[in-house]
Length: 195
Length: 195
DNA sequence: TGAATTCAAGTGAGCGCTCAGTCGATACTC
DNA sequence: GAGTATCGACTGAGCGCTCACTTGAATTCA
Image (tube, each protein chain N blue to C red):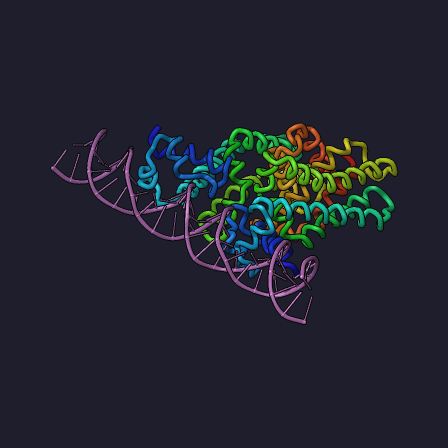
């Protein structure tokens, strides 16, 4: 692996675990084996490392979702929604460090002053919201999901799932043990009354 | 107002908006009109200011909830749940800066090494979770809420409501416009099928 | 050989916190 | 009541240190 890739990989881990400001360039240097000068040769400054990480993350998320949508075929919209939630939880586990990054304030504070950062964050979130929304719309066509505003409900469902992932990382409650209840709650919230 | 109170008030605002580490004692000094030495006369160090803020917050939250529970009397458990969500959103608005503090990582990182901090966080969250759980249990007695694990459902509902508040502060989506949908989603999730 | 990459040793701005000391109010002494 | 002592509240210059970033030489590569 090139020095540049090593820097990105280690920085991702450090930014996630300790936060952007609390990550020291000296530590990044020590853990990668690259001298501090080398880091600044590849990246103009610390913030550019952060942006590079976010850009890679966006690319990976978009790719994962395209692949997921391409290879699945759901019977009903309700089933598609359950699949989407499972997929989100799967990604949050497979890309644990980068999801942790999304739960820190660093990215959102940068997004306030940096349009590129803001755009990348919106792309990432829209991947999730779009697939939730599509599931609801499909479900309303096939009758498995009751009439309700699709986008708004997608946002509510997403904040529910994402909130649980966040609680899990805070170690206050064992939110990981709530998977079954989560799916059940979602089903009760969406399904048409008589079915 | 005493200098000490002024320090606490301004520190709450700064810690919420900028984060603990990113808040400078020099800025706190300038905004309060107290010399830096004065701050360290009243508080042993920066961390102690943070803990004092959290302790006040805990006290206020507990008081608010005791008062809320004492003066309300709900017809059904489902109505009580809707009231509890409204109350949470009301508090999140009335104590905006301190709720923002809860959405930063500072407190949770401190909680990992400081038992007092952890205890205060748990007390705060249990206030919310307890009232959600009580509403569910009441609703299951009076028939307005379907059978489901009360505590687990309370946690899911809380992460949904709290997740929306968090999205709002991030300025990515206008989650504030979702109040009606939130209540509707909650009602569909909880109510007994035939009612 | 010259361009790209890597390196270690800085540099200086900024930070949390200390400390010697000021100030004004209160209590005590004669 | 004048003088003295004590105290809590407050001050701000400055110390020791950290840390993002620079520099210029060394090394590697094409």
